[in-house]
Length: 279
Image 1 (cartoon, rainbow, N blue to C red):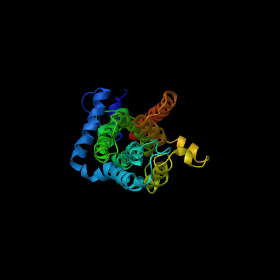
Image 2 (cartoon, rainbow, N blue to C red):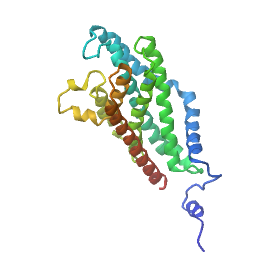
Image 3 (cartoon, one colour):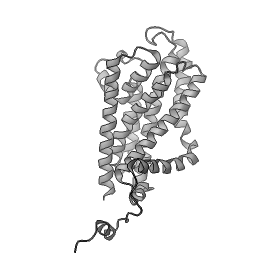
Image 4 (cartoon, rainbow, N blue to C red):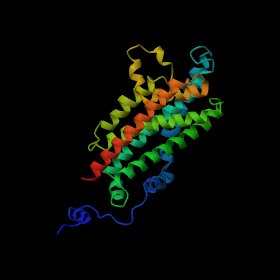
């Protein structure tokens, strides 16, 4: 006589699924609700890294060093503060995406084991990934909106088109978050692995992806490295929207690249979550 699959899982020590199945969107929002419950009690711990850090860059470089930069060909005829503000919006999104997709994901697998608890419910690994990415996008939108309000107070934002830049910044952050979430789902012993992502991927990308100066000021052999980063594509979209000069076909290319990274990363994350939670 053939036993039921859930009985086999119980015999192997796996928790038995309980309750009724829910829709994919509802399941993803349940994951988001759980993360929001934690975040609304602990948001102060992440406020500086989410909003304060890019604002310090804006004040130090935009108002400080920027006061010595005269409007010309390089800032595009605007002040350096206005030139820098949309790029730092994208930097903030990518940095927050990195923070949300590394240690919290590993912790949910290894230390807090939140994903294992969710997986014991009718919510599937694919839906857990959907909830994780949906939560990350909400975090990027929220922190980006706060950054824009403060940046506008200091004169860094003067065009309402910056709201469109917020969407581009969120897309750039998600284009980095999805593949990173997929990778972290395969990490078991964190060691220096996650720290190296911040040191050798995030920091160089921030410095050499056209955030603080035009990319064509870099040596020719360095520029292709920046082209493959989501930060450069997001910066081109955000800066071009606010300052003008964004052309249709280049914009379409930037969007297509970011969407391809997001879709590919999400599919890979779903596969890696399913494999890990099945063990």
